[in-house]
Image (cartoon, rainbow, N blue to C red):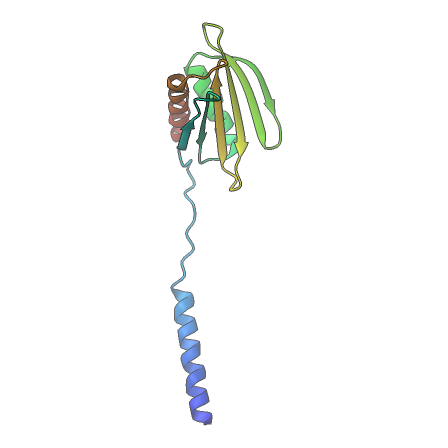
Length: 136
């Protein structure tokens, strides 16, 4: 009986040791993940997307993309987990941009062009932001 108990304990120790050695911790990539989960609401005119980066990186990318698209910054409010921008283009149309954090700590963006929205402009702006994120 004592011999069987000792054999069982040795077997159990071996199985646990093998199970622990098979576990691998995977780290998230250090670079920005890029734009994903893009959605456009025809009702509100808001274009949403996940940026896959921190709020700081998203802030830098939005400001750089706005410069490349020749937008003039009217205001920028930086709060703890929300950054709001107001831009205007050469035709005086206003663009509202909101950066927020999701539950995983990744930046989300919401873009609204003028009062009714513009899907094409929003997609171009998102593409410029994605290009800036990949350049960092």
